[in-house]
Image (cartoon, rainbow, N blue to C red; front, side, top):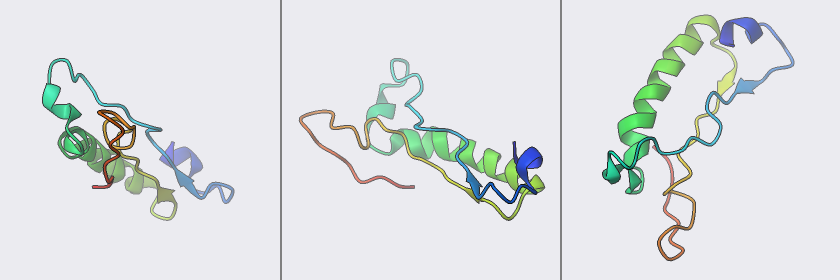
Length: 85
């Protein structure tokens, strides 16, 4: 994707994973704690994506999203947690 659109002036950025969801929380119940999945699973994946992306394209933006649950979905009595890495 980065290589294909690197010189396309109509593309200003990429969102490699739209609205990521928590991976196997049945196996790892602790991933449901706020920001836990983001730091343990999502950030390392985004680091890999970033390195590959910028090998081909250093000028367009990459938009990284945090996991929706449990961060921004009102789970557990309507609690919405701050997001970000």
